[in-house]
Image (cartoon, rainbow, N blue to C red; front, side, top):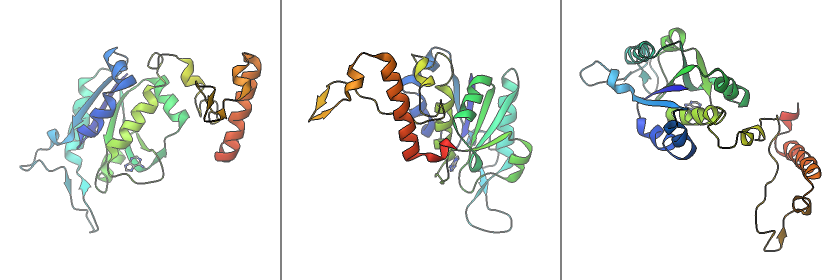
Length: 226
Ligand code: ADE
């Protein structure tokens, strides 16, 4: 799956997307992630990518010209259609179904990261296919949200996680939060692992886990139970 990220701060993405599972997925060719500095498409003398807002107000607005030039070049350079996703606190909330949909479709994605007060509305109206938020809070930079988005989608692509079942049993994959997990030792400072997990009875263990997942969801995220 090809993902281009357009940002004014490439280093924010390079670290997290160059480590661990995503690093291996990129090396194995499952993910073709390219991180671009939007400033390279700025044509003005000082390579400006933002300007003051019309009508006054605080902050700066990211200009149309570099964004259109960059996206049009990236679309032309890759075969097949691309979807342009703008990371912004005003977007549709990212959740498991959205991530799973992108992982299944495996479209070429171009992620546009906002900064300052966001982008000129004409970018959203005429270039962006989807506006996505990673939560109801405002980050300093959309590049952080892009990393979260890529991670959430990439781990659902078959082969990216070593054991494909590990994504199936995750929190949210079944519409519930994941219950507790334990590993050795069986007794740590007097806190014992529940006996059922040591019983070797896989049927009973599965039932216990399902009950624990339901209990945890009821306690922490009752909204998920509808
Ligand atoms: N940029 C700033 N805040 C954001 C958020 N919550 N989601 C996506 N992009 C953002």
